[in-house]
Image (cartoon, rainbow, N blue to C red; front, side, top):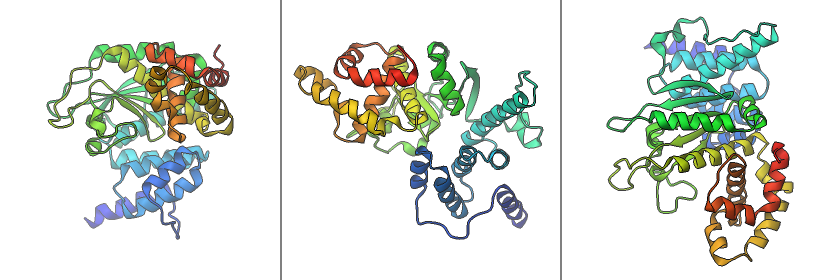
Length: 348
């Protein structure tokens, strides 16, 4: 036990030095700062959290990503290595491996070697024996990383038809959008249900799910990095798995959650004064539309940042290809807002 502890501490301190004084903040505070791209402040919180929770793979991943955001590439690489070696079968390690592959590709391009590579670090901890058991990589689609979560016991796997449809949809995205998502290391994660990926969320209530838990969630933008898309949802009471969500709704969810990812990539543009100005103008006019329209769009007319964020995600989703009765109502209700977002994405 002492040997394991000593090795663990050596890994931690070789990756980074912990600060002597830490702010009284929670892990969730760190995530919020991280999503706001305040990486330096977030890093301090995550390191403090790791000091009291040394077996947290999530903390390691956030620390590595924060280092990357601060352009401290060597520290990021070293932390990814510690994460992979210490938690080889975790989802976080799989993500870290993908980031390491991208960093290696960037290094090759910078050194003048542009040949493609699918290799990982020459390290025993990254051998085939340590490939994550919880998910499998589907490679890179249109410059965007895609992986599939393996199901919990008795849950169905993600169907090949859904994987294929999601890949096809990603390839249709404008080049600038795919480039933006790639450069910000956004990944798409397909899962049978949200609970297969995050069992700990089974009884949590999410935004927009009043009276329901995340068992009913078809997808989310998670941790500032992952666009999580579910093929199915679960019954709130029996926890049985429902039939597959219709493919057009799955793709609409993909577009919407990628919309949230793009919002983040643009520095949380939905919270800027410029966005708020056009959004409030449209929202005021939308209230005077036919009652059925304003009622159907109530989720996007919330008088809070949530309304701005959800409207932004949905409108970008429409720009990415969502086409439904609701999307037509959104176009009518938010003409100035969608024009503003198209200008940011260089889309006509």
